[in-house]
Image (cartoon, rainbow, N blue to C red):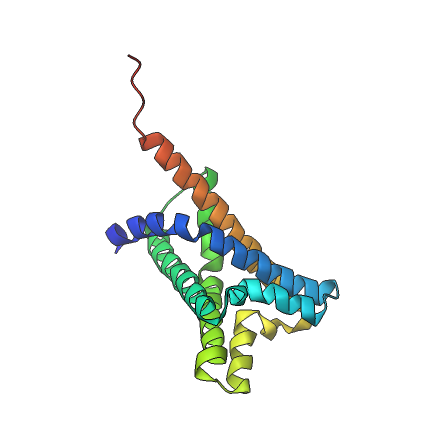
Length: 184
């Protein structure tokens, strides 16, 4: 699986960097704002409209969450396959690897439950209990009201770290392999 995983991971990650940053920042803003800073429900819903893409309309929102959510799942799966073989010992690659190990399951669960919740609410009409279960997993409600914001902060900051370190490695890879201009 490694021959497929590395190229997939490298080609997909730059395209998903900006939307993943948006997902992480808006998810953390909503949960931390509501839990610690008394953000109103109205402002919270506006933040969630950007988190889910509802600011773009229902159809675009469904496409947006599908593309980014499934893209994140593909990055997690391809990254997990690479983790088994990678032996990075220093630098940015080592930090990327350490954070990736800590977030494989939470990121996969978050992407899966986020997509299911969004589609369940807008398309399939899931029961309230099902929606609640999906949100319990998605945002760490199982840790209780005091633990939930820390879980969101951990996953969100971890995702941001993966994006930044991943782009840094990609930038280094392209600058090393780029042909040098000839001095004529």
